[in-house]
Image 1 (cartoon, rainbow, N blue to C red):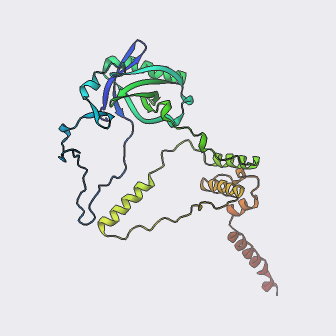
Image 2: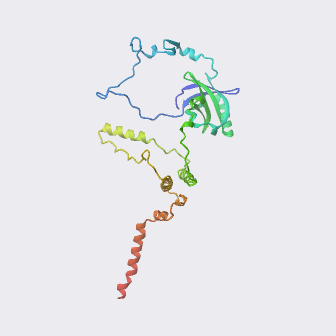
Image 3: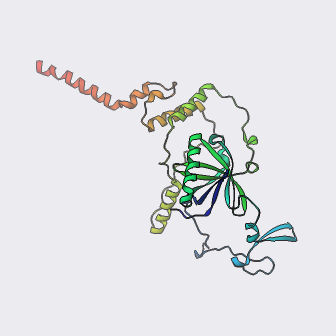
Length: 305
């Protein structure tokens, strides 16, 4: 079971649910150290006082808020822990919303919430089932790491999950990022929808981190003194290159259908159906069959002569 990173309670009206919090995700990235290239020794970050140049240990370091360049107010951990916040020891549910109404840009890290003790089991299951039947999610406030946060409380299988969220003013506007007005043909839109249908799936569990796999092979090759893996072919479109959008959509739909072994009749109506026949029965086999037939037809002539 994952280690507990925080313990407290869910405040649900007058209901209190003691819970333990553990991370819902794991970091499997490959991490590097900074090293001196000449001798491969570690390069470390040292904390040094600006005034006397003395290197400091963690016990010598505290928090301070800079009011001006010459005035800093010290703040202790004890003072932070004693701030009068209702969310300091509880995840306080403040509202319920439709799950689909939440902007995914606002969702950050996810955490599993587990019932802390037998007394918490019944209210825990009560909240979970209520969320299941209503297709709702709970908006909650909680205070971790010296700041109050906004969260989304939902369900995954039989567990409650807390997703930390960005505050509304932390999400930048996308208004200035939209491209200028363009002319789109209705056929192009339908082609894009056909491509989406051909690539639709209900299971994304098979996708892997190919960068991490390639990085492992690179490290293994360097460790064992083997030749480095060849670089991947660059098949990406160059910036500024003009493409035939409809042709690209047609080719993409055909490729997606082929890779999933689906019936090619579902491809775009502009694709010629005779290509499907060629895919099912290769031309080489057809010509071979015809040659055999000719030989059999020609065989009786010498016998009758």
